[in-house]
Length: 292
Image (cartoon, rainbow, N blue to C red):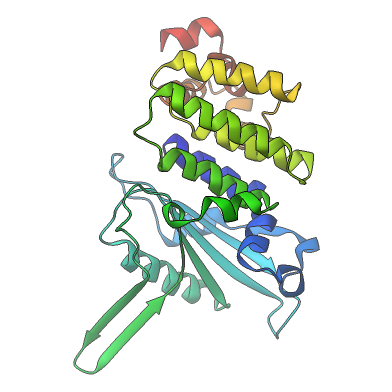
């Protein structure tokens, strides 16, 4: 998985209550948010095993068990997919997810497709198939980041809206040079800090912005880190680090599996994570990391 996949997976877990409030203004009346959420990622992978080809595309999929306050169902399933590139088979894959999830759980399902790609013309919203009088039509909720209005997102105090705004800044300005992108991102960071949001949510969205940025010059990323640290006067790395640390632990780093630690460090270095953060996540020495 690339860096953006990791970021979106972490953001959906860090901000899932905000995700629900963002798409459902009456979320507090529909969902029992106090009961929390259960992320069924392993179960989803069993239903839709990854391609054996290590070079095949990977997808950001989340299947979440959510408790409700209304209706006869005590809990439902919410399927979320973040799509970062054009895929002609996307709608079919969404339908395949639906019928496999339904067959496994037989519970109400609602699905979301969040398009975080650069192609304004890519926006599949339904899947249809028909043959000799038999027809199936499947539609799902869609959200195209490039189509969103900056002012509307800016006016929101919802942390998920701020994550979307951060992603849109990067997606819609890919032709800018490092200095122009730096100025836009720094200005957004300052506005984010003034939002009426819980501090832990601000830290998580800020972290999402920091890692979503793509600078050609690595020194510019280091400068941005320093400027943000000065701006906030504290360490703002939280949600994404916790996600990566959990990933590392699940893969056995805490048990001393040095080779697995090296594999994760190699991937993090390939994605231009700062060396000190790789050290923090993997417990590998700076010298080893620099040799990778």
